[in-house]
Image (cartoon, rainbow, N blue to C red; front, side):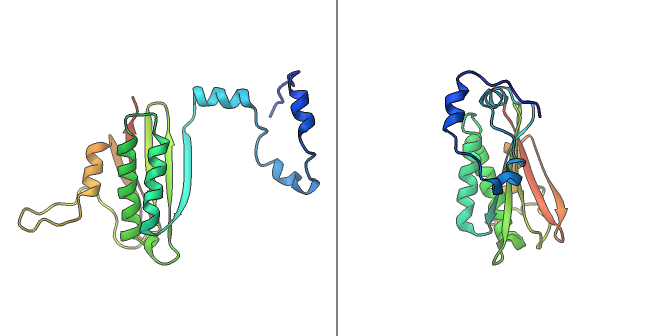
Length: 179
């Protein structure tokens, strides 16, 4: 990584920083030096997808946290509410229908965003059956209470899918247009 030339106004800031502890030297190499000008440029004109990823405990109480995070991720778009609802559905399915909901279970929420597209993804621990977006709904009077969530996601998203198996875990996602 090339070093940017120091600005004259950096001297007082640098002088106020404590000396790094020698034991922390191996950790400093893992992350690049913060450079405000590069951070602002990347935030204003992202070339790569912005990714947020978090592991949540596999409990129904934490589904609301995942939903809030998705809404925050897209809060500057008209799709924040749709994103929150979709993530709530995907996270609830992971907790209710996979090994992620077992004691000690967990799931991963991954949110990706480019200037034109957002991907909302939940990865569970597998078990149960493979999620499907095309489950047939029976006609009245035997209307089930469940089974509509993934089909509703298809109506909100421009693309959705599932990868994985009950043995390896499932990645279930939906893509929302941002333009």
